[in-house]
Image 1 (cartoon, rainbow, N blue to C red):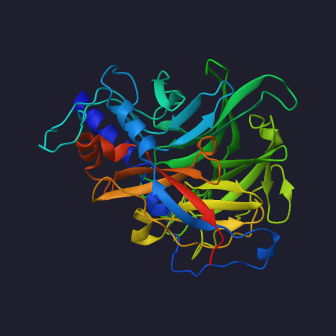
Image 2: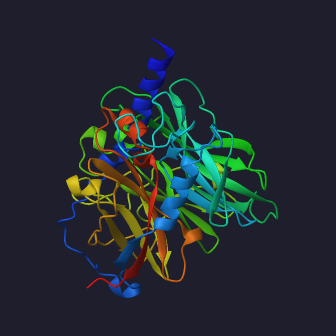
Length: 408
């Protein structure tokens, strides 16, 4: 196989990987809102209003189109962020394009910026923002592949003490370790949850530790990877994860939650999992949302805390799930979760494009507003590499600002 053909094959495979999470997000939005028996314990919450955040979306356009460097970020998905102690914001991405971006017109004659189909792609990257301006891309990939056919996707991250009670702060980044698989696992087999420790302020990768191996779980669709989102509360970090129900033919994926004391994310022995009755170490977690039939989540979702209420954002069902964000709410990090609420359709750059991976960004939220990103990609995995090379806007995060309210 030629080098160019190898690159194209790699792009075509990688670009569909997180898009598979869209297809797994099959919540049935026809379900009625459910305020639940514990509605009086906290305030039910739903999306009250939203608007496109053109400033944030435009900043990623500006940075991605900048032709001043050829080794920096020009597009990616799996968007997460974490505020650093010195005020910088660290953005983490999964599959990422590097290389130059060319000004329009593109080869198809359309007025869109474009990249060559041989542009390099890596499995993960990190971009630093100072103030409201993206500044630089760390040497990519941030975390090298652990071996042939194996890769790491960074997900949620937080700054915490190096160990409980320590003064030294580090960045802990949750990672999904996946490996190439056979159909129906064409988008990779879940292997383990890892935690990378990055030093401060230089953001050097010090170590990577496996905290939750799934190799002994024979049913691949029941393997759980943690870190799609996390919530900090009362000295604990609640870490949410999901399984991959779609390849096995289940209509929904399920959500799970673990907790770790502050400073313990990198210590496998510190992780406790919700069993349905209690927190315990070294056990199989119990789903907190998802019945395998009618209610559940996509593999990539986000949870925020609004006063005493937990709000979960995920994609909606069926064809609506390709362009509609919906939500659940709960009075506890372990549920029960009520919903789904009525969804909203954030803007897409053009027809034939899917939205996925809604992620809240607490460092950019406040004053009753929530900053939410969503990734976009060409709807069909076949030909996706060519489409997003011809129009770079098809593989970059977009942003909305939303406000919550009590559901009617």
